[in-house]
Length: 415
View (tube, rainbow, N blue to C red):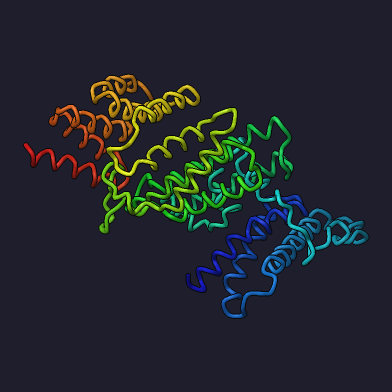
């Protein structure tokens, strides 16, 4: 890791701690977040030349606090410029003193930030952008590159999110039960979306974006640390680790996609698998099973198979049936169709896919790709060829498009 990488990692890790402290101290999320960004920028410019201060967090708190005090003084002056009484009430009296080196970091600050940034009143796009910016420490440029959207678009999403938080007056604290359970589901869903986008990018030239999967995993570890008894948190972290363990085997040196059945499993990360399996065992010991626990259990079955042909597909099918009852949606049905095909034959899977033709997923490239794969398994090469080409036309991911076109080309060559 280079010195620049170490500096960026330090700033990223410090950002949520500092922001949580500032919001808890001053109360204004929008003002505190803007001030933090200015402090982070100042650190990025000054520390490489002047050296990292002895207490980096305190340095960031001090610089950001000065910015907040200036903002409050300016606002106070604007409100009372024409009032003689303003001269008799110094703005300093309205402000808490800037926190110093002894200002404590509350253990639940990062979790409270996650709950705030993933508040249901925000749009999903704003939830993701705010979480990555405020809690993950990513810049708007980094978020834009990760999701292939202009930096200005990311900035607008963040701005809208902060304005909604300001207008609503949502307090900076952990919500009480049962609201906490409802809000936690949103937090986990946001982290799940961030991880999925990093693991299989929905568009662009790259198959995966490691900065997103790493950040989603780091934040989920933090949630797990603070909520160790929650089975769904353990399930989500286990799912991330077991999925991330396959990264090195998912693509060839030219960046082309390698499907699960063809991956060299000796390249899977055994350390992540062992940790993931332990988390799944812990998650499944909870009395109430949720969708992340079940998805993690499915990933665990794949991880335990030394070869693709050793995969226990009947067990995976049973888990997908539980998942579909727990959290029904077309994507789960699509994945269950694959398990049905592997356990009971391709025609059984194709029959299940027919139930999705009128669903929102009907034009999704994955439905066409799965149908093509099952048609190929069933021996209908012409229909499979058309399916692969239809899927390739619909995906916006270049690696997936090339993979699907290669499958179609192979069928043509075999004719």
